[in-house]
Length: 147
Length: 147
Image (cartoon, rainbow over all chains, first blue to last red; front, side):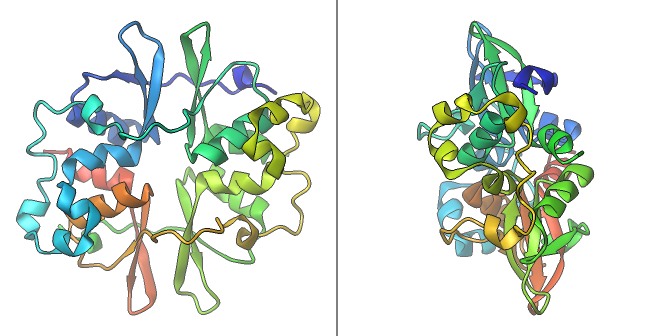
């Protein structure tokens, strides 16, 4: 069993996709993250689902939970209200991390190692710079625990 | 809107749950992770879905993807075959990280900040040492993007 046998179609976004649209896509499709394509349509990185929240949380609240607590509830509910014009580009983590990207020949063991190491439940499968699809933790576990 | 308004029931495991059972639970219920309870039933930590794979990947393959590649496909498919007797305890990361645990009064902003900071799509909600349920990234995004 190789990555090509575990492929699923997966929605993609671009760096310029509005962050609210990305959040709605994650919510509506029950996705663990999104594949971000570059200008020529090649996979650039993965935006983990939790990271769409980063823009919605003021910097001072990210580091200090006590500060988040003093914001009143009505205001706290509108975390996506001021994000017009903000995009996926703005939400990507600044630090360069290992990307959960592999090729269609990767074995189950390679995919599992990549997911465990990058902590990404989503791996993009690429061949010749072109996105073939994704392997999800869900799909991988369904196959390897079926025996 | 507070954590108590976003609560969902969430399956739990103990430190002694066999890792294969945890993997099957993740796969069958489409969960992003599992809440791990201690001996008296209080939430101890979250086991992220990707970390159930850690035990299934030999240490030398976790650090060096090239080594994972040389394992033949038939053997690579059986990543969970040698895990009899291994438990959730063995799969938990060694490093102590901030736990994605909050109380029922946490606001949407607090939950979002916690998920973004811990990179956990799952937050356990606890009151008086007792688990009330969980808030998922999914559930949070559905509510805050609905407007």
